[in-house]
Image (cartoon, rainbow, N blue to C red; front, side, top):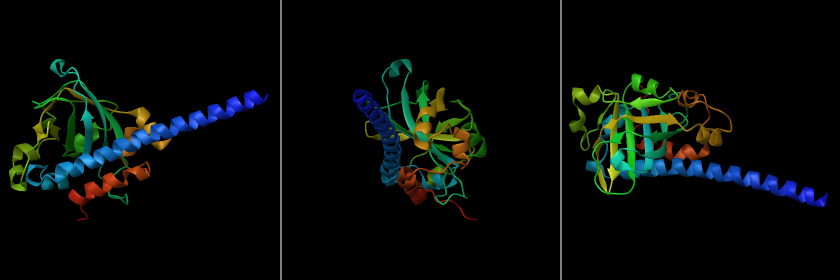
Length: 229
C-alpha cells in the first residue's frame, strides 16, 4: 500500500515537472523571438524599415530555423506570430506558436541555422493565418526592403501581403518565401494556454496573453506602436 502511494506521488510529481518543462520551452520560444526582433532592429540601417513595421497587421518571428537538408529544400522551425489588437492592453494579440515547413527561403549565405521574420501587411494576409495551414506562394510573399524608411516606399512593396526577412551567417536581408508552409503548433498553444485554443481565437484577441509575452510586446511597441488615430 505504501509502495503504491509513493508510486502515485512520484507519477504526479513527474507529470507536474513535465508540464513545467513544456511551459518553459514555450516561454523560451517567445523570449528568443523577442530577442531576435530587438537584435535586428538595433542594426539601424540594416534593419527592417520602421515605417513598414508601423503599418504591419501581424509580425511572425522564427528563430533558429533548421536548415538540414537545405539542398533538397527541406527545413523546419518553430516561432510565434501576433497580430494587432487595439482592444488589448498590449496592443497586440496573444502570440500563437507556429511551425515552418518545406519550401525554400530565398538565397541564403552561410551555414547552420537561419532566423526568419515575416511582416504581414494587409487584412488578406492576416486572414490567411486564421486557417489551419497556409502555404506561402509567389503572390503572397516578397523580399522586404532593408534600410532607411524611404527605401520602402514603392507600390510593389506596399501592395505585397507578406514581406520576409532572414538572417544567416551574420547577414540580414530580404528574402522570398516560396512554397513555405506555415501552420499553428497546436501542441505549443495548448501548453501555453491550457486548452485547445485555435490560432484564429488567439490572433483575434480572444485569448489572454501569457506573462512570458511581455518582452515581445515591449519590443513590438518600441518599433511598431499601435496607431490610435
